Length: 518
Image 1 (cartoon, rainbow, N blue to C red):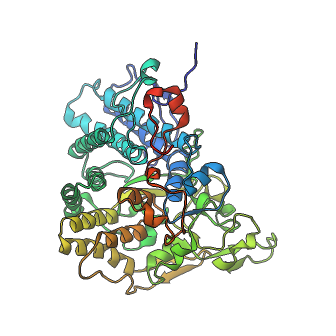
Image 2: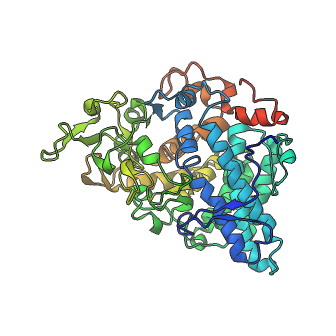
Image 3: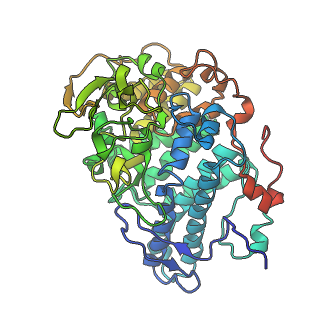
């Protein structure tokens, strides 16, 4: 009998705890007869969300792919799959795609199990729907990534246990996928609570915020404005606010108390057997740096222009980038480590060390981590936070001709950036950055370009920039001669979508045709 490895087939739900939900694997669940209580639904939901913190999804593969495809992060590596992402020579056999595609569908499959299983739980809707709504949110979260990355994709909204059915599915038009995402988020918004004990648990604000972002992506400006301003106008009810110190958003020791994250992937210094852990700190860290038990791997590294074109008075630059570091030049623990500016980072004598400032958001305050180089950190990664909702409202307001509102929302974000705060240099020296006049409030007429630039800086290295480039079709400029990384000659409009994985097409020809250009 022919053996199939089918990403769409999930007979059991693999549950490994994430964040505050669980910390130990509890095995494989047989869905038949399992769902008896709302606690059983919650277990399946937790399993779905745990797929997102896997190394194959946000732990490294998807998060780094999004960085490399943006115009803010270059590559210091010769690994083929990363080179393809960075240089827009991506093949359908790319090893990053072949890992985050199935992991995304595993998250969807687990959400589908929770939703289907909830039908067997004999309690009132008022009791079980707030739990089931988390699964609807998770399914929308995963599909929103897929549809933006690949366009038309197979849309599955129920458990699949039949191999023949799994290998005969076709792709669903992107417009239908978006409609289903909206439907899921509307259900989630109707039933999720206003506040949650952890931002790793979906809330009403999370559903509404994602609806705003979905509508922004679809260029439904009024709907994007309505949803984002609903969140803003109910910030008190939802317990949301801008964090006073920008650095705190990337400090694992204090982020749990912040009111800014709306939905986050929460790591917990736990390395599961299935790679459910975080590697972004080593991927972005400085090669040879003495921090984090070995520094980083110097893989995803900004171009120098990202640093030099960023106003030095903007506190966000100091938080986002390391322009100094310490190295152990002589490998002698008895002698002091030596501090160097970024122009001399190559003192680590490694071929991939670059003399440019490195990404600092994930290397300064990872808190406890399970392995050297800050692998398996304690970070919370904000998938959407209050500052982005303000910028969604600003961008949609510009499109609607509501300049006063656009000014208000952009300038709230800029005002926080001017507040300064306590941060740390790459040499692990605590510094206090005083309030400044940079960035100044915008005046006059706000343009779409103004808001996109604010998003680029505010959300730098958070997996947002590539999606902005795609939805606004900015590639011609971003990857042209005036781009931050210089000209990328291989880029074309077909690169706005990734190719479907080659092995999936081989297993299921019904997924053809491949995306144009591949």
